[in-house]
Length: 304
Ligand code: HEC
Ligand code: HEC
Ligand code: HEC
Ligand code: HEC
Ligand code: HEC
Ligand code: HEC
Ligand code: HEC
Image (cartoon, rainbow, N blue to C red):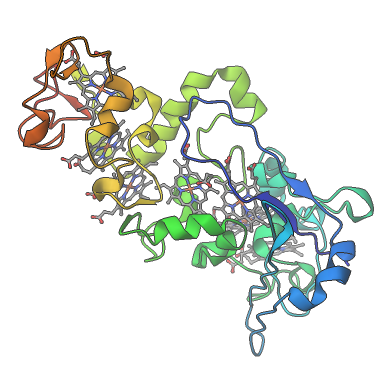
């Protein structure tokens, strides 16, 4: 049995400032052992003919707080390990050592590095046929492969406001490195980026967004320093219940950085200026207030 499921922490990273150092744990188990006990609880989605299908093995009660997920499956194919891909896809395989997903391998007897196949499915048929069409999964055609392991991410793309990934207009790999380096572009968690210094990581994460949202790049005469903490300090990149993918829909968005100790009874001061009558007129960025929230060419308070 060569299939190796991955145990993901059910609660993946919650909304965190990109400046925070992230600690993660990924655990692996011996699939064969696990399978024997849980056979009846697995369900297999088997497609007809030669069509490639995804097989989902999931068991959320296995260990409290953890979900087991498995890579995609291709009928009749076995896992052969990432080294087998090297002969024909040398460049991708060489760079892959630095990739987040290269860590997906099983210890012990099962020590085959299933990195490539965790997204592309078992490769034996593909390798044997010398790369024939329809013998391997290309996740770019559908993010379903990614959702097998990242189930909670799917839910985010179904929120009322979201990047149109399910609609096929934006793909996971527009914002994520699948083959090289940190999966979160500019995320700064691989060793090389850590050595080069954390701050730059955020700026290059913003670069990812600027590819499609050039207007936010500036340069602005009056820059909002909040952008230095990353677009994600105000936007949920996958999706949100709030318009414009905002993490908060009201002044809370701004007050998490601009809160100040209040000293005058019944008055609300923000930035040392009395806002008591202003907040009722709308959000901080509407009603003629800080409308140029990303930065302004003319006004230091980002009014326009
Ligand atoms: C014997 C050579 C060979 C080996 C070994 C090989 N491939 Fe391929 N692969 C090809 C060829 C040829 C193509 C099709 C040509 C192209 O599109 O570049 C291809 C295409 C692909 C594609 C794109 C398929 C598509 O529908 O767009 C993926 C993904 C892929 N290979 C992954 C892998 C993985 C993962 C492995 C290791 C398990 C692997 N390949 C091993 C030759 C090989
Ligand atoms: C995290 C998931 C993931 C892993 C792991 C992964 N890939 Fe991919 N792969 C993708 C996605 C998404 C695409 C389509 C987007 C793209 O081309 O970047 C793709 C495309 C490809 C293609 C076709 C496009 C091309 O550039 O020719 C090949 C070949 C390929 N992968 C090989 C590999 C090999 C070999 C490995 C392991 C060394 C690997 N992949 C590991 C997600 C993954
Ligand atoms: C076989 C399971 C599996 C598949 C399939 C898979 N991933 Fe992952 N992914 C993981 C694991 C495990 C981690 C590491 C989690 C951690 O470090 O917290 C991870 C990490 C990530 C991260 C970085 C998370 C972080 O906090 O740094 C991103 C982004 C990501 N994956 C995107 C993708 C995309 C996009 C695809 C599809 C092309 C994909 N994954 C397919 C298992 C998978
Ligand atoms: C518009 C850009 C964008 C797209 C498209 C995108 N992501 Fe992300 N994703 C991000 C950013 C930015 C982060 C880091 C968030 C943070 O630092 O708080 C992230 C974080 C993640 C994480 C780790 C944190 C978490 O939310 O669990 C995973 C896993 C992930 N993305 C998977 C995916 C998958 C799978 C897809 C495609 C279905 C996808 N992403 C599409 C930008 C994107
Ligand atoms: C591949 C191109 C692409 C990338 C990269 C990208 N976006 Fe988007 N973004 C889009 C598209 C397309 C829409 C939907 C526009 C629409 O519906 O009118 C969108 C919508 C948005 C919206 C909502 C805009 C509105 O008018 O409601 C925000 C906010 C946003 N993106 C922020 C980001 C952030 C932050 C990043 C980086 C993490 C990012 N985007 C990366 C293409 C992209
Ligand atoms: C300080 C919080 C904050 C940060 C940081 C931030 N945004 Fe925004 N963004 C907003 C707010 C608030 C709106 C809604 C503006 C409106 O509705 O008039 C918005 C709207 C948007 C829109 C929709 C178009 C528009 O301008 O109204 C896009 C696209 C966008 N932001 C992209 C980005 C990108 C890319 C980054 C990172 C470079 C970023 N934002 C950083 C608060 C922020
Ligand atoms: C991630 C933290 C962060 C968030 C969130 C944030 N800001 Fe800022 N903002 C800053 C920093 C840092 C400065 C520069 C230092 C200062 O003047 O306090 C700044 C400066 C400003 C200034 C200029 C200060 C002045 O002297 O007039 C305005 C106006 C402003 N922010 C409005 C907003 C609004 C409106 C929001 C919500 C949409 C917001 N900020 C959200 C961090 C943030």
